[in-house]
Length: 132
Length: 138
Length: 94
Image (cartoon, rainbow over all chains, first blue to last red; front, side):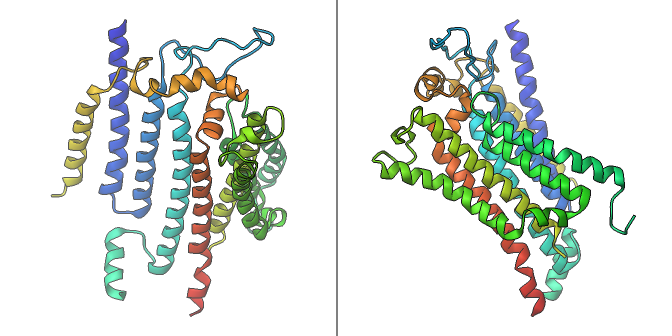
């Protein structure tokens, strides 16, 4: 069944690429600024999902050491029994950075709307050219 | 119902749920050592309890409990606690943020607990501060 | 010209899918992300730090500089939103 697992793995990669392209199309193809921001968010979350999926291992358990069997003796740990914790840790940082970026982008959108009265890209460029 | 006030069911349910959400957030921070969780996750849960209160009763209720100056001071205090722990380890003779130099038993575990609490404090106050700025902008 | 966005997006997607065919198999314990320093964290981490959760001790002990940078990022994000939105009053009074 290793071939079926490989095929499902390739299908997972295709799914991540489809999510990335949905975000990319929303960033470049839509004219509203809020939709562009949502597209950036979708792009970023799909990349986080992709990197976290690199940490999977076949027949492995969660990366928490459960004690209670040895009664004081340290359990013998093997690297192949636990899921790789390293990509999950790095993506934890990336998620919080994404929250900060979304907050700052929303603040900028509020100021732009207050100053120019619109959030559509073509009307915005027109008003910037008129008022300088 | 006064203008701008929510329905009584929404107000009551939000008020009832807030302490349980905060207790769960505190549990997630403190049990980051032996179950999934940690500083960031628990900090965001506690911040979302304040946002729930703001949705039920309006943002002025949150402002009464957690004022603007206290928000900025708490954010800075979290970063100060984190960097200050590193400087304490430096002054005790080891490298920066090397918890093995602390004079308590299981020093690395205690150092990690203080780090997680500092991160939780900072993330809570930062998210409530961003929410305040976005909501009270006219 | 109207469908340029769609064409570019589809082209990029196809290139990425072709590129992802060369990735290691999902769930392989010998893939490059699980090979170099990660077995050392898994096997020796509990002995050295006495904390059962592997994600916590990698985040707060072995990689604590990254966590310091990340707390600084969320703090800077909150301060940036403060500067952008609360500084608007001085502009409105001019």
